[in-house]
Length: 114
Image (cartoon, helix red, strand yellow):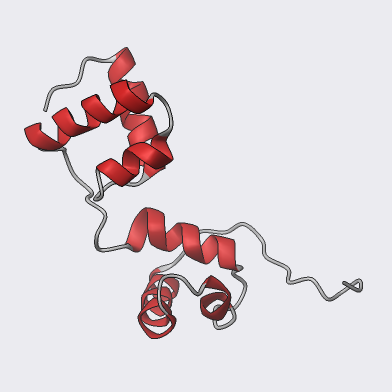
């Protein structure tokens, strides 16, 4: 790569128009073509687009309290798999691995209830 060829991306907050654009591009290109998506997002690279979608915009990710059944599933998976949250999130499909890690860490400090 020659100097000046790299794509400059500065850290900045996502705004609503970027979120809408990202959702539209994921609908067009699919949730597995992050280079194609980011090519149409000014100032965002493929990693930023992927993480924003998976962690915040994916409609399949649950953003609320866990049900008693989900909590039991999470507890069993964590006991079986330990701190391998990427694998634990495969068991609890509607969750993102980083969110599970935060939840489990918080529950070790403050007792959690389903």
